Image (cartoon, rainbow, N blue to C red; front, side, top):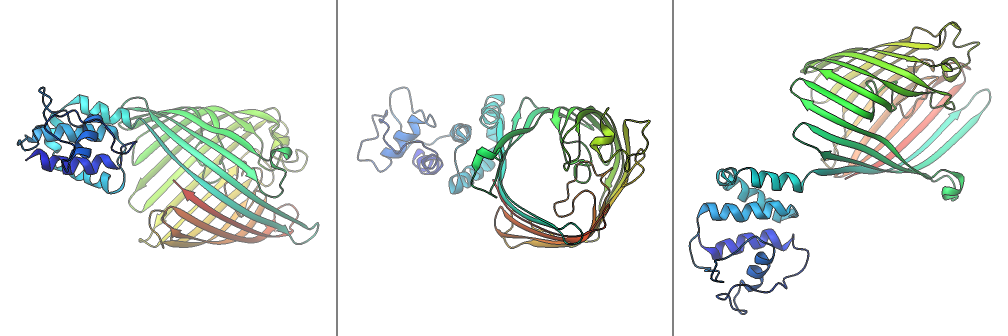
Length: 420
């Protein structure tokens, strides 16, 4: 392989990644200013991709070894700034020279790892909701919210990562901005996670099990899990003791355990949550009518869940939960039939679903469902669509009743998410 060919290849890798246009001084005496590759060779030398020979010559017509080519590819990979076609060409070259790159050993591996220790994901979303009670005491609540979410993940070593979630929220109902306290930036989650064969542990502030049903919140503590297909999960810590609809009263001690199994099209699980707090009765409802077991300041919740995929289009999922210490509104459940589903990486994909949800407020402490609130039972229909890659539009409509008043509710939820 000749250096002239190398110049052509590596130039494509560096042009898109260079922070400045070609303006570097040429260190090689045998590459005159009027040479067709003068700019490319000068920039490649400035970027450290090529070094030439000790006598200040480049020797562009000299054959080079595959090992020398692999060294240049490794240096280009360490820059980690190539994009688009440049990145595609770099990947092809890395595949072609994979044996030589492996023989370069730890030094190149470390260069690649250090250049990519922190990864950022996130999304921007716009949400509009309208929740109506159409009988008895009428109400019509509308909200328009904008959120920016950032989720960094930093590598500590081969087993440990540090993860976080940062949310910036603003309400668009008025133009008051931060004057009404609606604008806020919150560090929602931050935790260290260790991943080992058949074992995982988390330490910090993160989501517990069942965050897709009745525990859509964060808690501060520790979690360990064992197994793969069959998985045991144990967690303990502290959690704020209040439903979303009430003002936080006290912080509760919190423990949970879950046993799940997933294989092929089927997944099932059984979970247990325990909370205790001096104010738990008033935090989770009216102590006189909803939480009559006044001798206890605890909540003991059992939950069963399952999901089954019939084929690439149809699936079902659901759960049932009950709070042993509540005398009313102590049951919650959901059953959902899904068809397809929007895939954010594939433009034009879509999905739809129909569900029935019964969400007793004394067990559905931290509701995750967008169109049905805690304390309501309702049918829900919805759909999502990907109009552009990494853009997801979702709409939900729910109609049913309030559990306590029996008033009719009609709720509409819409959201557009842009993932990056």
